[in-house]
Length: 182
Image (cartoon, rainbow, N blue to C red; front, side, top):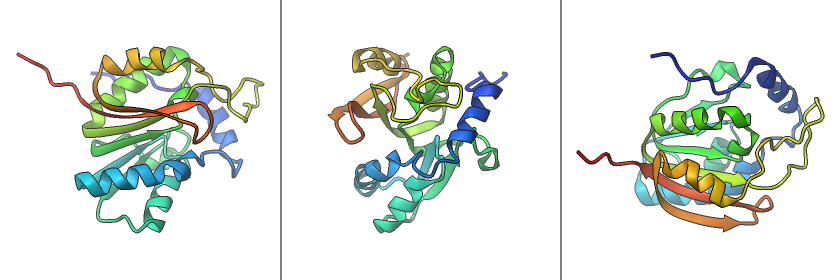
């Protein structure tokens, strides 16, 4: 089965350009304490960082003394990371609002495919402080939590949903794969 497209080549190039900014892709540093708590409480053995950017989540978890898990970064702006990999805990932090709107369902579907136990996803709902070189706001999707929740419940059971002001107006959620009843 062919893999669904999750990014266009033109947008991949815009993201690679934006990642040259040292202040782009730092949200995971702020969310790492929550991720660290999930790892400690659940004992996950593998973490996939979907939209890993410069791997700041791994850096922050290491600094917090959290170790003993396999780390699988994925980011289309960093092709050297390879393809997304299955993991006990899939983190997608401050990524989904950056996805091209026509591809968001494909990306959430891909997250569902690689999430074997838990997912931790954060979403910012307003405009970003950064702009793409083509003039668009870096947050291509600026929708309320109700819009996002409809997307997530198609693929996941929501364990926890929490509003936050960590990086502005947003929310984070913990999800589990849907159980298919026979």
